[in-house]
Image 1 (tube, rainbow, N blue to C red):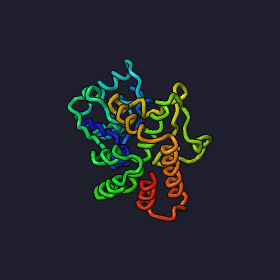
Image 2 (image 1 turned 120 degrees about the vertical axis):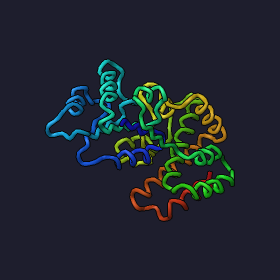
Image 3 (image 1 turned 60 degrees about the vertical axis):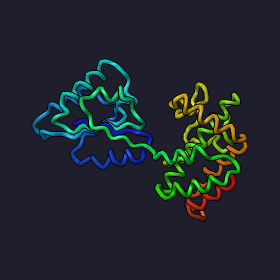
Image 4 (image 1 turned 180 degrees about the horizontal axis):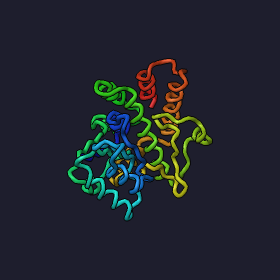
Length: 258
């Protein structure tokens, strides 16, 4: 069977993917796996068991189209009935791509809708920010909410810059590329070489981009910079063990100061 694991909740999808692996599994990077590699395993005998477990990362999202890619898809479909094949993708995959495979088992991991409701409602001088946060805490861990707050303000700041025809970002990012980067991704590269857009902006649908632009217009540039810098400081404090309060308390203070 072919199992496709995808969605925007990368942490949960990755955990599920890794949990399926066994000691005798074969693992490949989707960009680099060759047809020869797969055929040798799928058709091989002798030392290999009749049924194999094959794991391929980002085959659909990063692999370049071409004859070999098409042939790999054909081989996976041919041998999926007697082997367990797992494809993990670091984002949500389109139905068109999923349809390339014969009756796949699809596991999609999405962030809960109530989290987006909370994030989309954040605005300056709004006491509802704190109330909505504690409602979200009843269903999600503070760590997930914190990760989503970082993502939200990174996108708001990037789109504010885009509206004002600037590619400048908070000063604390300058020269930070050599610092360690955690799961929160607060130090992730926020500009590409061509047009200053962070990668995630380019993946947004037009309606999503419009929504972020509208929300960013509620803030001044200084307010967005300040919130983003505080998120960075909280993240750094957690990583270095210097945060002198719980993450929940730190987020409380952040939301009260917005």
